[in-house]
Structures are given as structure tokens and as C-alpha cells.
Length: 369
Image (tube, rainbow, N blue to C red; front, side, top):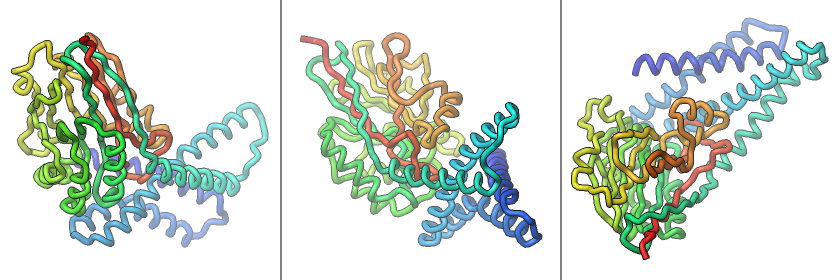
């Protein structure tokens, strides 16, 4: 954990160094006071996520909320500014390579990049609220007759920056879709806990006919596994921790995220006991937070989340390189399928860019006459 934190802070500090370096170049002549101001601002902003963590641990609610919004909004702006800045740098380098005149001086370039980043940030705030419904159908002889619908929600990251409003958008959409089953594939709560007891009542406003089921994601362990489990159960979810349930003619199986083991808590990541009583004729839906496929686990459909569709473009390419999957539906070997949700919330910067939030509606229909 210490190594991860050190690397993350180094990367974040380097991002500030790049951005403030552009500011430094754009506003000569340089003075000691200007240099000191940029240095102190860089240190403060780089450490701001740690300040949020400290304030939250002290239960200073209002200060935590304000600091979190400022810190993570700035983080989103900074990332967008750097992405745009690197494109400008590439264009400038190409212009020099081909002996072309670059039309922007340092200050105009800085202002242009800042305005573009600000515009994308504003759009990102809007897109983060535009909850979409993704639908797909599966036909199978393993269902005796008729059909069953499953609504998947994932990665809400409820806490300081996502609260009752985020849940209400989900519940309103569930009322429209009227699924038979609701499943939550992890990271429903975030490491920065808030009034989870109050939020659980909003989830209970909708009760699916065949039940609601959830699995543990990595952020449930960061928030505290005991509190996370209490919240999920108070919200009406049956938490599947290496367990299975038969409902609606299918088998739902869920396992813990590996982070539960690294947190020192008792984990249940193994599907073998849960699937011991199943047969090849059962249609098995595996709920697993991270989109990693175990070739030795029998399932027909795996539902996962975790990667947010990258959340902020172009992070989508980084998630694809890391997990070797893309969001949406993937056909696997032996007729198996993997669906990776973009999730319904945000983590870190409260924005989404070209990766809108989603609820997924899956219809499993029998091919039997």
C-alpha cells in the first residue's frame, strides 16, 4: 500500500510540475514570490487527496465535502489540461520538424489549453449525470420456459461525493425497467464513508420481484467491510460471498473481490463450494467485481464492473491494456459471455468523458417451445 501511495503521489506531483511549468513559461519575468506561490500551490494540491482522507477520518463532514469537491474537481481539470497540453506539444514539435511557424505564443497556448480543459470539465459534469440503459438478450435452452430479466448496477461509489441523488436516479430507472432481479457487482460504497444508514432507505424504495443480490468490490473493503456489508443488507441486497442462489430458473453465484484477502479479512473468492450442487444444465450467472475470467470456473454469463469504461477519455485505453477486456459484451470460448459495465458513478474526479454511466438490462430467454 505504501509503495502504491508513493507512486501515485509521484505521478500526481509530476502532473503538477508539468502544468505549473507551462504557467511559469507563460508569465515572465519570474520572481521569487511567483516561484514560491507555484511551489506551495503544487505541494498543497498534490497532497489534497491525503487532506481529504485525514478530514474524513476526523469526522469533519462539511470540511471533508468541500475539500473533496475542490480536490477532485481540480484533479479532473488537471488531467484534461495535461492531455490537451501533450497534444499541443506534439503539434508544436511537428511544426518545428517541418519548419512551420507555430501560431501560438506561450500565454495564448496556456489560455487555449485552460479553456478547452474547462469546457471538457463542464461537459464531464453533465455526462456523469446522463444515466443510460444498455440492453442485451441471451437465448438459451437451459431456461425451462419463458424469460427472466436482470438489471446490473455497479461502481456507484457512494460516499462523500455520491449520495442520495445518485441512488434516486438508479431507483427511478429501475422502476421504469421493472427487472425480475437486481444485481450489484461491487464498489457500491466508497472508501470515504458518509451517512450510509440514511442512504440505504433510498435503495429500499424499489424491491425487485425475485430479489436483489450483491458482491463485494475493492472499495467495500476500503470503506470497512463490516460497515459495507451492513449497508448492502440494509439496502435490501443479499450479499453472495462464495455462495449461490437459485431463482427464476437460473443460478446466481457471487465471490469476494481479492482485496478482501489483502485487507486481512476472511475472504470467499472460491466458486467451487458454491457451484458444487450445480449441473451442466443450469444457466449460471457469475457476479465478480473485477473483469478477470477464470477459465476453470463454469458459468454462462459473468457480470463485472470495476474499470468504469475508463471514466475519463483516454483512460479507456489504459484499462484495456491492464485487463485485456473492453466494456460491454464479449463472447468467450464454449459459449460463455462476459459483460463489463461502465458503472453508474464516478471515482476521484466527479466527471465522465465519453464513458457515460449505465444500468444494464439483460434478458435471458428460453429457446424451448
